[in-house]
Figure 1 (cartoon, rainbow, N blue to C red):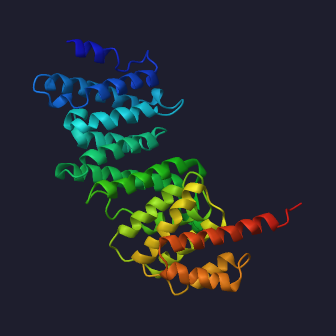
Figure 2 (figure 1 turned 90 degrees about the horizontal axis):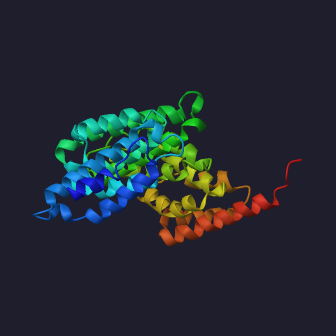
Length: 325
């Protein structure tokens, strides 16, 4: 049919530029949106979308198409469109085989792309009962792999620079799993992950700062009780993040997270000491007292004011501190 010929001209082959082909598929898929429900055209459209989806999965998973400049953004545009038609957008083995393939691919150079693809599958199928087990296994495997690649647990714990992209992808996938499914991802986050997120946050890691806040936000939703020491560590990481003058996206997300941290986990009795320890070099005693009181009792807009004030003190210190010769 004419539709088959049109799709055949778009799908990827080794002789084509992946980004150009994916852009063509994205435009074609956008034009087909909704036609899968047409009584006359539905079957042909679903078949066409299935061919496009299969080609897109190959683009994401084939190493030779992805290592030189990453998976093109058009691949995600295509998947977001084709997954809406349901099972027809999945490879022949269905969710179980796809989840296994993506979790296995995560350990390679295309790992972050595999995690992103699984996140899109979670968004569409995370609520389906027969998808919970394979998706849970895949998310758990990717989370564990990301931690082993990006975090050195021995010697007090240390982030691994070479594995930070995989670690960030694993954390973001887990956060999305919690968002898109009631069951997938539950119980995966552990103490080591929280400690790694705290270090990433307190050291203002460019690649891990925002994913770390996402992971800690997911941890707040877990029903398992947390030790006082862990809660103290998270508070300390938040204060260190402010003192370190964080990136804009982290700074904007911190006040709402701090409010959620206070409301979801009992603030430690040592909170004032934690704040004083971090900011004693740039804030007065009265400022620290007001900051503690506001963080304990204020609304998010009040916390924003406190964070901005502490940040101003940290910036002033950074400017005034003499440079080392």
